[in-house]
Image (cartoon, rainbow, N blue to C red; front, top):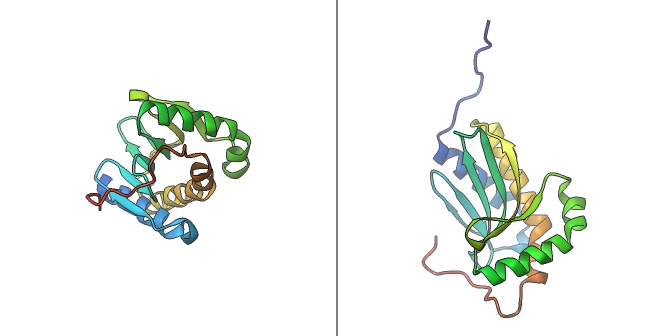
Length: 160
């Protein structure tokens, strides 16, 4: 006999919204203000340059959800930040455990991220949000310290 599901499944849009709202609410106020974007398939949270943002990316067809810090600026900026975060690997692991990977990615981008089994209920969404807030807490000070001086720290007025 199969046990009945006791929690309500969320739409992808609701899952992403809950993750971003939870992360924003639990990220340190001293590091804000935070900007956020949540769509049905991806959510982002950032404090300055929106090319350097925290992201939640549910991939239900693959059975996973990714969250982490993404560097999606120009290739040189991304490479410099990737090298800086690799140099801080011990600090990252001390704060976040062994799960985070620090890797180059597609299109010259890079990321500090982890993969979770995909779950689509409210308790899971809130757990993901708390974990994303932990990323902000641990990584935002490193990002600010290591941001190259020639990279603008900006907020685009057109992004909600």
